[in-house]
Image 1: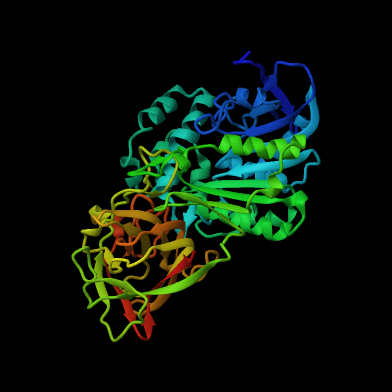
Image 2: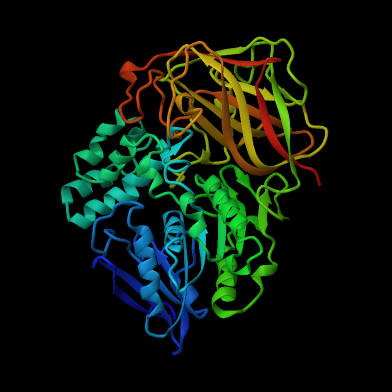
Amino acid sequence: MVGDAVVQRDVPAQMRDGTILLADVYRPQEPGEYPVLVLRTPYDKTVAQQITYQHPAWYARRGYIVVSQDPRGRFASDGEFRPYRDEAEDTADTVAWAAGLPEGNGKVATYGFSYPGANQLLGAAEGPEALACIAPGFTGSDFYDGWTYVGGAFNLAFVVSWVEPLLALPDALKKGDLQASIALASQATNFPGLYWTQPLESFPLFKDNDVAPYFFEWLEHDTRDEYWQSISIRTRYDRIGVPALHFGGWYDSFVEGTLENYAALAARAGADPTRLQRLVIGPWLHIPWAQHTGVRNFGDDARNRLDELQLEWFDYWLKGEGDVESWPAVRLFTMGENRWHDHDAWPPSNARVEEWHLHSSGRATSLSGDGVLSREGPADEPPDVFVYNPGWPVPSFGGRSCCIAEVAPMGPLEQRFVEIRNDVLVYSTPLLEQNVEVTGTVELVLYAATDAVDTDWTAKLVDVDQGGHAINLCDGIVRARYRESLEHPTPIERNRVHEYRIRVGSTSNLFRRGHRIRLEVSSSNFPMFDINPNNGQRSGEATLLQAKVATQAVFHDAGRPSRLLLPIVRR
């Protein structure tokens, strides 16, 4: 008994290849037939992602059987853990097995966030008959693009701070390797030290302790090749035919994937209520989901109420109670205003993209410079020039990483510590004379040149209040050789001006009257992303020993109009 739920530990389920996966099964005390909720988490079935969700007993009290399962190779389950590789078939097999559980009524739904959110989408694409609906939270659409790599750059802080404590250490414990377990446990909080491991392909902590072989595979496959395409969620959209409740956070590492999943599946669902899609995005980190995020308090309306929302979703599709079809298609929390707004689609149909141009006299370097962001087109202006030194990268303060806020750059934080550097270009609007709401995906069209054979370009959108406090909203990066394709990188020509389109990110923020809209442009954001050595080396092989200092130039004249594309909502 757990609370007032009956629990059965280590219940076996056999997969199609004979592998046995174990689950904890929670049931209501009262005898009867109940629908089943399935959570497949690689972070220990006993924990059941309670770091964000209510305990399975909470759902059992509300008339559900809850299955919390260790995936293949994790904790109590048999087999080898190969991230993403077996989850589609194993999730579908688990759903079919769960439909036949004693006291179950044959109806099944899935839930879980992050990796378990991806499990749901992969499994749904297999079309298990018993699956009535899913609720994927805070998850991506592709395991290369926006997960392991962003704009061709290795998503360093997320990957290292995810693999070390949450994947590799449990791997060593499961093998019973005491020496490896001690070595990994002793380094579990050694950040930022681990971020400076070079070259990454040697990563002694993993290699010497014979754990996380997949980490080295990810480094080897540094383009979006068949290795990644074969497991992508976005290539399976046409096979996902169940209702889905998507939810995420503006400061989540995977928010772009969450938005893409919703938009793609909603477009395919059309008016078919049996494939209904709904989207909710709050002002949250990957973990935790709370109104206090970084240096911001977004108010009581931003408190975590996702369990209650999820319960309504399940009650409708599994019990026929309530009316989720009347919910707004999209509900977004607008920061700055700190209010929820309902929309008919993503991106919102009432958002209009406006071009805001970069200006300066050639001195936009740092907060002390004269960089300006305005609606006026550029004149005959000189470029802004700065030096990018890989040995002294621009530090990450806040942002959209994952998974542990204490060791990864997450959330809204003060950016003036970054903006005082001369290798950060700062472009700000004059004080706004009226409120400006930005809701949608922000993009930067950048005309830039470098004397290096390869480099990075970074961008960050910032809200500056009346007191000068500069708070980050979203950020992006493009590795120069990936500017045209993530599948087929192409070299750049040194000292030639190239056009780059940087996805700065999606957000919903009200820039209040008296605030400024600010754009930061640079060539590093570490440890959010790996350091580009400017010499064309791959992420896995790069070291500072061969790194080159690069001289960078950003152009904003009539022939090369660098500009920020802002989706503006007029109410």
